[in-house]
Structures are given as structure tokens and as C-alpha cells.
Length: 212
Ligand code: PRP
Image 1 (cartoon, rainbow, N blue to C red):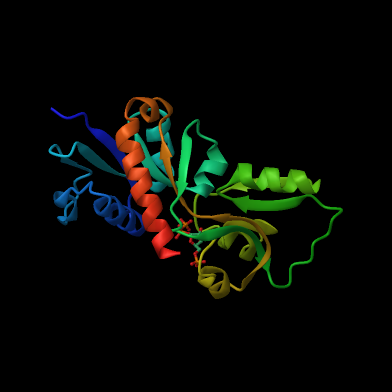
Image 2 (tube, rainbow, N blue to C red):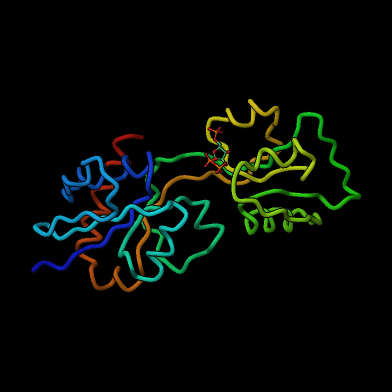
């Protein structure tokens, strides 16, 4: 039997795009297109197994070797700093990490800034570099609510189209870092399943160059 390459895909719209790229790379697994609630799909003939994973968990599966490779957002890699190889920028899932606040927000530098975010480490390192004291309010979603309800002064969050900010009367104060989806690999898998991983990586690289 062929050695299986285990691939963690981020569940959702981005994951569908990523799977299409893997399919073009010759690692197809037709059963994945069936509409059901299954989480694991494999094609033993070409030796590939896919899992649908919560996007923020992909790096955990890869770091611990439950998946050999996977696709994770740069936001997650910056926030958690997993011990993995970042192989390729896939140039999809593009957005940015930004600071936002209500349009009438006045920044009083004498005061500790209250920052609501899912990305505490990214926010801390950004404000540490600016020499600013902050108080992190760790939320798990709907971050935009925090400044509206007076829970925080600003938010550090992902901005893609800007619609969520606009519809909640918030504005970008500063851009922190551009974000996109990255191909990542478990360090020992990269050594032991190198040929297959390289093959996928080269094809994905060609595909990203074609779309630029
Ligand atoms: C993300 C992010 C923003 C929104 C930005 O939220 O946290 O709320 O998308 O996208 P936009 O600029 O295109 O409006 P997500 O949908 O992941 O949900 P969350 O509130 O659970 O974080």
C-alpha cells in the first residue's frame, strides 16, 4: 500500500479553493465533493487523505504530526507561532490585520489603551513596538461590538472587504500586517515524505504564479 499523505484543509470557502488547487496538482479525491458531514476523505490509489479542520486548528494538527501538511492563515501562524515549516504563500484568503475604532475615537496617550481582540499576541507585539501600554480584552468573535458598547477603545482584527467595520461605523486606524493563506508542513514529515510534499508545493507554486 502507498504511504498516505495527510492533509489538513481549513473548513469553509477558503478550504474549497485550496482543495481545487490540490486537485489540479494531481492529488484528487472525488468523494470530497459529495455534500455530507464527513470530515475525512481519502484516495488510496494516489496516497492522499484530507481532513476538514477548523481553520484556526490546522496548525495544531500539522505541528503535532496528525497532518503532514495543511493550509493556515498567516494570522494564526503569527498569533500562535507553531513549530512548523511555512512552505508557500498561496496568495489566496487575502486580508489584513488592522487596528480599528469608532470614527470619533480620540486617543489619549496618557491612558492605558483597552484593546479587544482574538489575536492577543499580535496586538501585544504591535503595541510593545510602539511603547504603548495596553489592556487586552480577549474575545472569541464579533469583536466589532466591543468599541460600540464601550468595552474597549479599539479592536485588533481581520479586515477583508471592510464591510463589517463600515456597517458598524468603525474605521481603520492602522494596518498591522497583510495576511494570506500559507502551505505549512510538519517538520519531520517534510523530511520523510519530502518527494510528495515537494511535488505538491511546486504545483501550487506554479498555480499561484499563474493567478498573479
Ligand atoms: C472576520 C473578522 C471580521 C470580518 C471582516 O470575522 O473578525 O469581523 O471577518 O471581514 P470584512 O472586512 O469582509 O467585513 P468572521 O466572519 O471570521 O467572524 P468572527 O466575528 O467570529 O470573528
